[in-house]
Image (cartoon, rainbow, N blue to C red; front, side, top):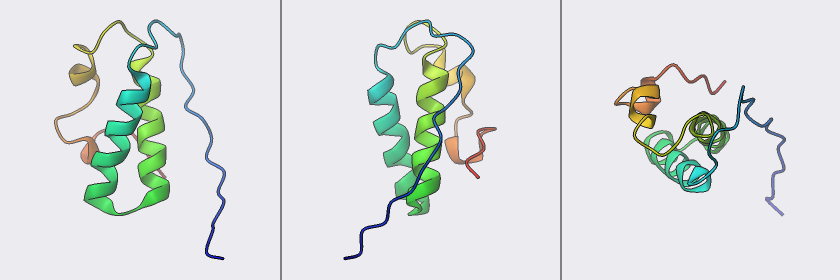
Length: 79
């Protein structure tokens, strides 16, 4: 009926410091990537990795330092 199921591995994090807002970071990462690429699997993987990176520090201020200004061209691999 047009439903496709796919398995996407979770992001591996070295240490969980603060999980506050990780769901918001996931949602924002998915929306931004999907609106630019229209590619569901890579958008999901990108959002998963960005949220995983967010777990590594307190708050949100450091998130801009982890990602480039253009998340599509950042060092986060989605494939």
